[in-house]
Length: 388
Image (cartoon, rainbow, N blue to C red; front, side, top):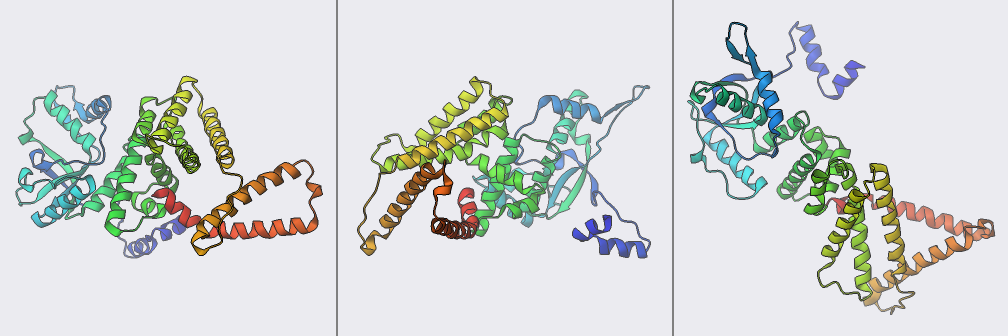
């Protein structure tokens, strides 16, 4: 079983060869070095929040005080640092600016080490802040401090970005921040390739499950003020519940678009009306202190109610001209008539399905099979539309 797992990740051959050659196999940082604290450069990165009490706890874990009054400092994991030549550093800050927006970091504003290279912190920002706290508390001159780092020579910005996201799965950040990181990576890859990356591609690069990736992208489609409720009302409106508001948002949008086609005017714009409805739904969950299960039921019922209202919002029939220019109108007419026929059939046969005739059942079966085939063909297009 263990060998099968190793084969899946492509390690079994190397390990077998190592065993045959009686060599050891190493796990852990490969290029650990001590660098001067003052040589480290920190530029904007995906992690935005740092809890002060957690930094204090981390600093305490680094402090070793002996009975004789001697003080030492320890750090279990080295910082991850990019060691970049001037050419690679220029490319790095250029991609960094494309990812975060704005102008590239000026290389002249960054320090270089004794080799003339740029040391840019990739991950370990919490540990670096803990070190700074200890230096301040013990009045240590930064010039006298050396820090253990894992050096990655000439690493690309994208690989550094992936390393940051992976580390944040261990040094936990909020799900809201994780979602924002995934969205930023998704948009960055889309801009670079001109193609939307799949959930599987993002999952493979970050080490996060496809479910986490999909949920994150769903969460980030919500308006910012709605997303903020996840942090503001952590217990009453957690991330997992706020995500459920996204399909409600799409259904509200569909409803107002249907009403707009019927002639209803929305002077402030449909998006504003949808946003107001989402705020009302969120506040209702908070005010009534609905538990996650009850909140999810409320959202599901609201979606179902809206879907029924969307059907009722359609005109009874729209007789269309059969001219070629009216094909779209004809298709819409048939769709609406089909929905109403379906609703009528449910009403007519829900209590006495035995009254359906054999040939009607045969026709229904053929129609259902055709619908399944068409739905299966359009799944990938539908998923792409949700990601957009």
